[in-house]
Length: 352
Image 1 (cartoon, rainbow, N blue to C red):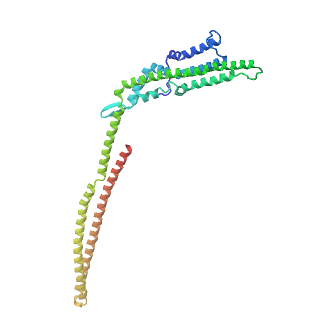
Image 2 (tube, rainbow, N blue to C red):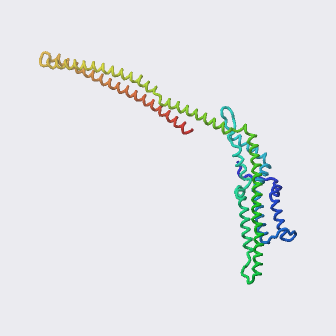
């Protein structure tokens, strides 16, 4: 949005309307000061103080809401076009319906931020009474006579001058309070006009903008969906089916390996016992010279059988290690998948 936009319009008539009564008041005092009419008595310095307050009021008038609403209405078509563009840019599709999430009121508050100086408008109603009171005290101070007199007649004259000055000085306070009331009246009138423009645009585009209730309903629906996804992710992450599968598949393999190992070890034990017995018999026969050659051949055969059994045991242990490694590798894969599910779950929670 263009923040440097300038609002212009032929609102001079409204400016004159606000300044009309203060101008008439100042003219009335001026005519009495110069004896054109003789309805009230006013001192020159009091009149100039009132004129100074009047000039300050004229400088504040362009920032009154009564002037601002005139400038806004003069550019209503431009404002409406920019509002439509902003509505289109902020469109959101929910359940097949496309509407804007932009608030018309927020848009207008930002759009009209340069139509006047809000700081001046906020302090104006309290500034004018304070200026009037300040002007009153200034007028009294200026009209304060010198009471260092030598006679009662002169003292009476000085007191009369003081009272006359005090009486006219209060015109400044009266004028300041009057300006404050006048400012507040036109300010409220202008704010009422701005509010009417805002309500009219809100009613015009009510079908093109998501209401707070609709967005809140959608938010709760999305929250419910995310909660369901969260629960499903937890279930899929911490589902014990894969552990049961491991127990069923790999433990069966372990049972087979253990059974095979026990069987093989039993055979190996029997073979070793047999080989040991034969070796013992062979050793006893070695003592007989006639059986030396036969015993030697038998010993070599038994040793070969023992080596064979030892190799079978080594192969069996190697097979057991490979099976265990495979099972652990499968478990690692399942755990890695579980960790991945947890990461996805955390990502979903962070995004929402």
